[in-house]
Length: 261
Image (tube, rainbow, N blue to C red; front, side, top):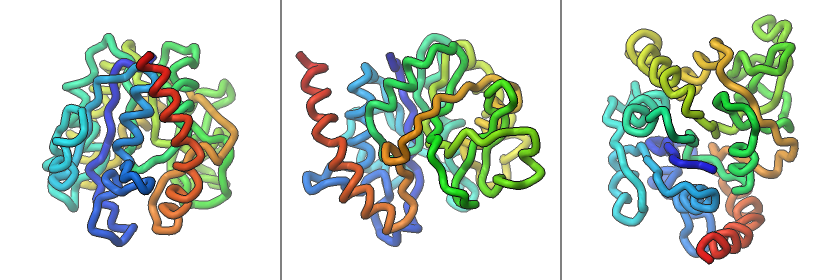
């Protein structure tokens, strides 16, 4: 169902106040990290070909994680997840594979990967949580009258910028890049690096917006906000460790055992 995956893991997690980057933080007493979680969840859905784009600190952990590693060596004050995606795309997007693109600092119900992969459209897809708070902090996705995503970003709710569009929900940072769209993803990434964000901090949402503008992305919306959380603060990390990871860790282990039988 999923052929390959790109995990963007170069962030240092400074907002969490610790010395350990977010992708390497433990989610349970056994020491399962964010990256461990993602690799296990992807394996549940058949994905064994994973590329992780990391910082020098996260790349140092590559000996214990079965994945291809790429170093994001853009200057720290200029780099962002857009640069990481740009570095990975030429190695992964081959016009044949179904590729998941995702942030490393998200924890989620692993079954969401299956819902994303089973969505019928051959267009690339963005996974959206339909339960959202009316706050400027969430990255929201907005669609046209046909339900096609057209715009996303923070602080857009209730502004003239989304007039005529309806909110679909909060972007999860998880996308499915379908084979027929690989050339478009590569072109959007190259354009952003050359013209839009070459001298500024970029995020992979900058690239995704070009696909929205072209009408090449579809949405897969789930309604239960308890199935996903981005981890940006110590308070969110506590919720992730104490509530979200325990909720799905047993199911993740059971599914892995079933997959090996």
